[in-house]
Length: 101
Image 1 (spheres, rainbow, N blue to C red):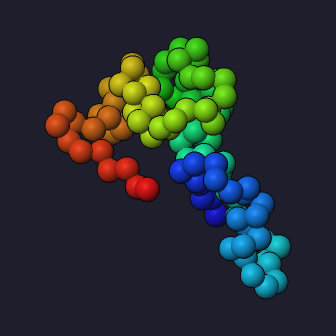
Image 2 (tube, rainbow, N blue to C red):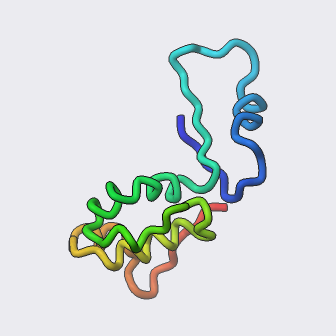
């Protein structure tokens, strides 16, 4: 299971320990991204740049410093040469992008 934090407020190992009580199944893995999952995905800069067909230098080397990773990811998708990706990721003009908090 993968979850994320909206801000690096707690240490991930402490969260895992607090959330998992009792005996743990050795086949279950719980991972906590320090920041939102989007920053974690973008951390593979070359892979993500290739996926969007954008220059790798558009993605910061330390993606955990991106203050609003969801919005940043959408801004990168706007630059994509792949029409289908732009259509599927970028909200339509006037649409409200739902940000879960």
